[in-house]
Image 1 (cartoon, one colour):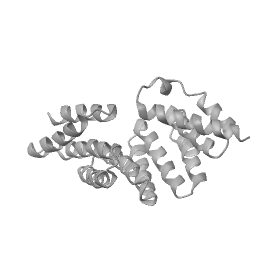
Image 2 (cartoon, one colour):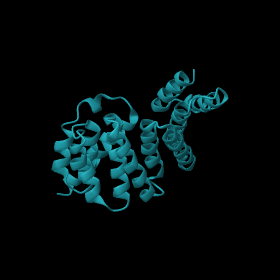
Image 3 (cartoon, rainbow, N blue to C red):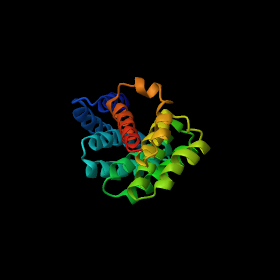
Length: 212
């Protein structure tokens, strides 16, 4: 019951549905009242933490995601621990980029160890964001190129889009356009977050070209 409710809550969270707030809260309440397994409890904490981050309630999100990572780690569920940490990095990035980088780095290590490549791409991107916030541009680019290649995720369209955004910020408009031309499936994704990210990369590339 808890897992099914959490899955429904996650769908509503990523769809931006108004029902997400109630469903994520219900999942946490139900998991505790039923004495759900630690991994399940950690999972519903992660879903709620993601929702909180989406609504800019980042301090609450960080607290919940730290607890999710702790519970999952103690239970030996290193995949959920890694997912909690990558979302913790996202929650911390605006206020504490150094802590965000540490969380993202730990997430990368855990997800790499488990071969969880779909989430590994997001952990690498969150690490790159934290590096940019601390002025480590070269380290951010390395995470999206050398490290991504070593992990076999360099062809992920999310990684490619992030690289396009980064090189556009550096004023390398032609390289940004070249990378953006490789994005196909992500453009067909109707999720607003993905489309906004593509639009942002495209916009910075256009600005860069206009100043050449």
